[in-house]
Amino acid sequence: MTSEVEQPTAMSEALGYEQARDELIEVVRRLEAGGTTLEESLALWERGEELAKVCRRRLDGARARLDAALAEEAEEDQAEDEEKDGSL
Image (cartoon, rainbow, N blue to C red; front, side, top):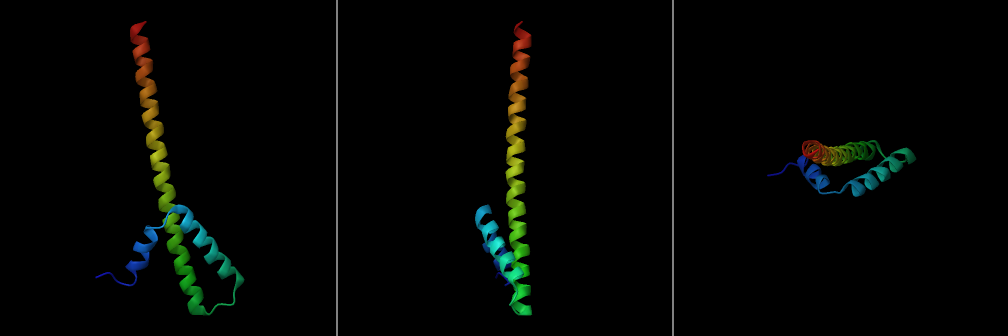
């Protein structure tokens, strides 16, 4: 059984980066505007923290994919250079 604490995280993980970022912007806007109760503010803060983590994980994943693609390209370039050097 999923606890209430785990459930929002699982739902948040289903969000794409842009969705999480947009919701985070809205959370920050509401917090900065004020006019919420302490409980509402705390809930917004917690949601914002969760959304920020989702964004960070998405960005870290994108960075890892980019690094892997660049490393693969560098390996292919090196192999091509070695082939050229060997055929001269």
